[in-house]
Image 1 (cartoon, one colour):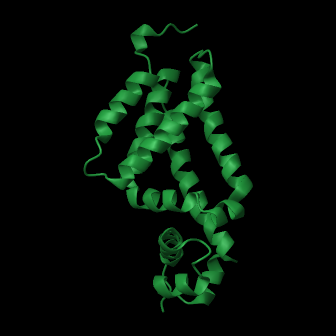
Image 2 (spheres, one colour):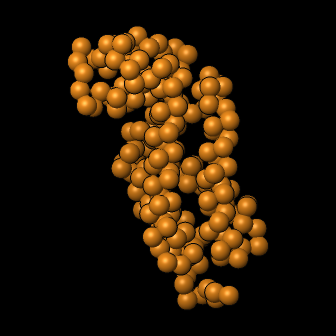
Image 3 (tube, one colour):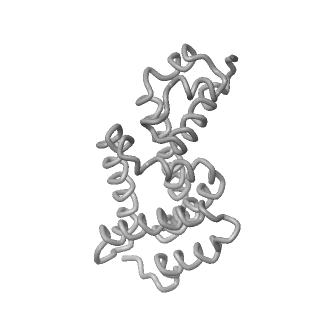
Length: 191
């Protein structure tokens, strides 16, 4: 068994795959270590418990989501920020398809929800709040509902795309989402 600078990420990747395939409860630390090709001792150097490892996977997903918001923050107008966020979300899903496929398989398991409970709720609220800020800046009459709808739409599109990326028309869907949620700049009157 070996130790390398990439061991921590290899453990995370292996755990994600095994949690998705065998379930969180059906995957042991020993199984993760053996499959990752590391000792259990090395695993415990990185993660105090299986629950900590699950939280690391969850945080990796949040880091991707935060990256989409960071990319959007570089835009100068609220419309362009919204457009950039939608595009960045789809690009991150495209780039990290394997991670998101496994993550979606993992996130609705009862044991996972029990372990992450409040963290999942807080993350969903954080995402909704960030999306809502776009719609508030655009003077939407119902920014909360617009934010929740866009959140659900991106989440659902991600699930469809990661299940059949070769046949899913991601670019066409992206264009439709932008056309539905982002008015044309010339049609928008900033107050």
